[in-house]
Amino acid sequence: MVINFSGTDFNIEPGRVFTLEELSVKYPNQWLATDVVERDADNGQPTKVTVLKRGVNAFSARDGVGTQTFCTMYTGLIPERNHVGMF
Amino acid sequence: MKIKITPEDPIIFFVKVKGPRGTREFRAVLNTGCSDCLMSLQDARDLGYNAFFEPFTRTGEGRSAISISDIFETDEIAVEEISIGDLVAKNVKVLTKEMPRFAGIEGVIGLSFLKHFNTTINFEEGYLTIEPFSNKP
Image (cartoon, rainbow over all chains, first blue to last red; front, side):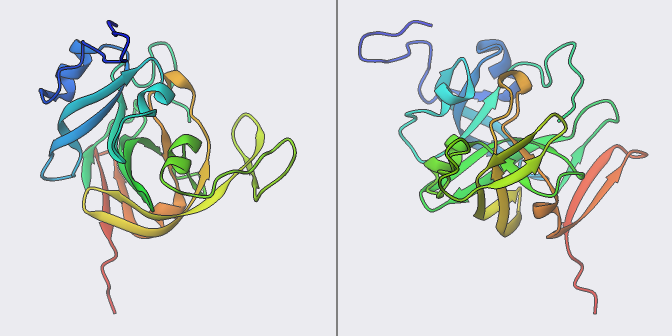
């Protein structure tokens, strides 16, 4: 992660639209705060987003996004490999 | 609302939670054995909900909950709206709880949301369907 002293994350490309699959390649295993720009017409699930902020955990991704409406997501496997999905 | 499911994977989808100060959208897992919904404490506070129960000093308003691994005390809040796609449930009971970091999800959708709709888990066709009540007389 390249960040200057003003806190700008240079690996974020403001306004660039990603599919969720593209996010997993560009920002693997990271937590992202995003703005949803396109949804599935049938179920309303996000399909395309722009990235607002990223972090190593959900707390840092949510913190200081600068807007009160956003979507957070993890780009890694859910659940992680070798874990059963018991919640 | 109709999404694909498989018997091997947890049923996970994005949900929107509305509060006095904004809206959060995050992945949640469907849990039909859970009486309440769960969301993160950080999101609850950021959205403007009064979620300041302190379990050690027992100050504030809290509630005991039983999970598969422990009994914990946490905030209980009434969320203005939870929505999935075009399905909207108002005044939904939610407990605050942070999910494990690598769970990849941030919430649980339980019966306090599902009670507003008819839910069908169809493994034969591989779909979860959540629909409004039919309003039959």
